[in-house]
Image 1 (cartoon, rainbow, N blue to C red):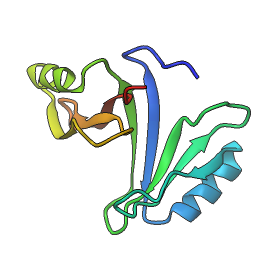
Image 2: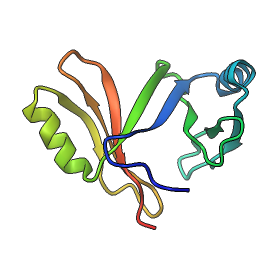
Image 3: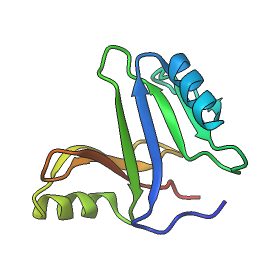
Image 4: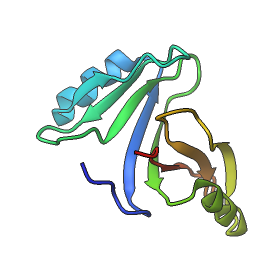
Length: 127
């Protein structure tokens, strides 16, 4: 698998309190397949999504528990911290940063644009 270029829409995530229902809906609608990615140390129910005929996942479904459902897109960036600083300079805001999430996990952050739209940025873990 090749790594997308920085600035590329590279991942999306659907957060839901019913991951099984979301899997059934999106799987039937788009012919997507799902593989469990975990459970993580935190016990998170996370399922990677792969499009029919694709060789690698393109997104995921996360169990939000009691938190509101959401859909968010992620842009690959060269430097998460620098991107957060740039976003703030441009009138956006940083919701949260996870710059050292642990071995094998990507650094990522959630940001909002000046209108309040939430999105994510990430840098893949070192190979």
